[in-house]
Image (cartoon, rainbow, N blue to C red; front, top):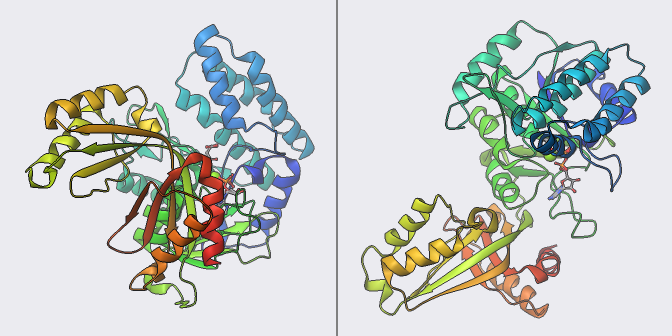
Length: 437
Ligand code: ADP
Ligand code: ASP
Ligand code: MG
């Protein structure tokens, strides 16, 4: 029953947490391959090592010397190593990393060093082999992750090693330059390694008891989800439930490996299982599996009389976005209206140009911009073929005085997405939560 375990930032934050993690690993011989994140926050106002590393990169890029910020990272790792009572010569690793950042290596290189140092330290603590993912997790020149090539490399490497600690979050391009996944990407690394070694389960250890029905920072004491499908996970994590990176399902789903989310600080709790839809227990009483949401969207509402009869209208609008290199989230449409919901991150610096080009290619009657929007996704397989789910949702929002600016339901009926003003975001999530739980 081979297990791959990934431990997140809070699990690696200090010597006390790392000691708890090593007890978890050593209590089960099946836990053979351990993937770690960089040290995260020890308390609410604390700084994550990864954030400090990005700051070091910026400092080095502008002044050539990151030592003023790097000292915080240095002290952090020295304290961890000393509190763990290790004889590891961490100073020489730290000097090498600081030097690398100062010699203006890339921002990805700087960011990756938190995971690198974390894995070096934890391998020393466990007495396991440190296996660097730098030359094992590979990306093409376009930045696309090379799944099958990576799978072969990792599987060949780990075949010969019984127990190993590996850094999450990064790999490299073919020329050897370091490349990271997006933030939270150690979850993806854990999934990739699980697939490569044919794990029976991918244990993802974090600081909550499992996947909750809503973000615990918004809803007080949300219910736990015992089991959800890969598809539900994808919808919820993509839409903001950041307990797992949205791309972490692909490698494990392909191989049918269940993910078990568990709490490092309460290891006896069985946590949440994420499995194929067909293996999910049918819980007919549960209409909605979970709720998630994201802030930071803008809606472009395009109106034109007789739009519906105009062939190629949508294509022309989408080609504007394509030329600007912008992807959209949703495109709800009416008879003579079409709206584009786009994240502010995608739109940044491009809004004026997009509106200008849309006016040029389709001559609309009007293009209105609504900024400051949030999207809220209500997700669950059991919503399909069940009357009244959307009514419950909209009634809950309207009785809380929240205006729905957009609503979109996929034809698979796996989710209903509503757009609300960001000032209503927290209130809306709570309203939807209390309507279904
Ligand atoms: P790690 O550092 O272990 O990867 P993360 O901070 O990335 O941990 O993810 C865990 C956090 O995700 C939790 O502490 C919680 O605040 C947040 N979170 C947001 N939505 C959810 C949810 N639906 N279920 C559980 N946790 C959630
Ligand atoms: N340390 C990285 C981050 O903070 C990756 C991770 O924790 O998964 O985003
Ligand atoms: Mg995470």
